[in-house]
Amino acid sequence: MNLQLCNVSFSYNHKKVFSDLSVDFSDGKLIAVGGNNGSGKSTLLKLIAGILEPACGQIFIDDREYKQLGRRNLAQKISYVPQFIETAFDLQVIDFLTMTAERRQPFSKKELFEKAYTALERVGIEDFAQRNINELSGGERQKVLIANALSQNAPLMLLDEPVSHLDWSSQIEIFKLLREIVTDENCKIIVIAHDINLIAMYCSHVLLMKNGEVVTYGKTSEILEPQVIQNVFDLKVRNVDNYFMPIA
Ligand code: ADP
Image (cartoon, rainbow, N blue to C red):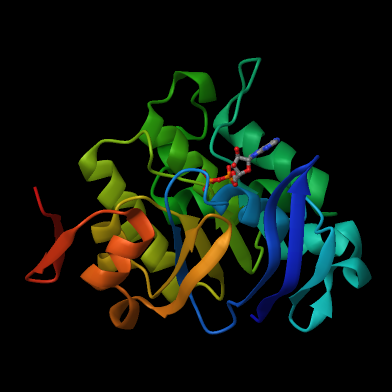
């Protein structure tokens, strides 16, 4: 899938976040977006998701501009997992998945259930189908959100900090899962991530941002090096056996 942002500008009321931002994500599969808090990562994801609209500039998916595609087409191409979901009432996992998909795609009830169960199996959580979504742990809930995104069969998945509240082993498990998904399914994933070593281990590409600007984008193996990390995060690090360690 081709995905390009061309000369995008965006402000919240009078607060400018991006001016003239361009990036071509076409050749990435599992793409991490990194940068300090406030650098614009979530705003970028919301623009790509079509939740926010650029004030100027254009976004293209498979060479068609968002405005030409319209909301319904865009919803079929992109699934977006926000940082938090709130379910005010008790809901079984299977109902959460089918209700979300029903709003986006014109499938029969039988197809919706089949797609939902396939996605739960893919993530290895078919046992959760009848569980109450409000009674799951952070890691379990995150897996449900990923299965939910998968069940929508969208070629582009956007994940806003999927591991920020998870323990170490769950963080690794989720990143392994994302890597498996981009290998097995015909899809691209863009994920906001904070742990530079997780990015180095699992992501094919990385976009690093600072103060609303793209510092660099490309293959993780070619981009991540101490000098770049120091510039983006204002943190001195050294590379020890391909792990980045802060210098105390
Ligand atoms: P990040 O995800 O990298 O932490 P954000 O995209 O959330 O960064 O924020 C980028 C900038 O936009 C920050 O300065 C933030 O304060 C501001 N911002 C984010 N959301 C809003 C909003 N809804 N209204 C006004 N300013 C916002």
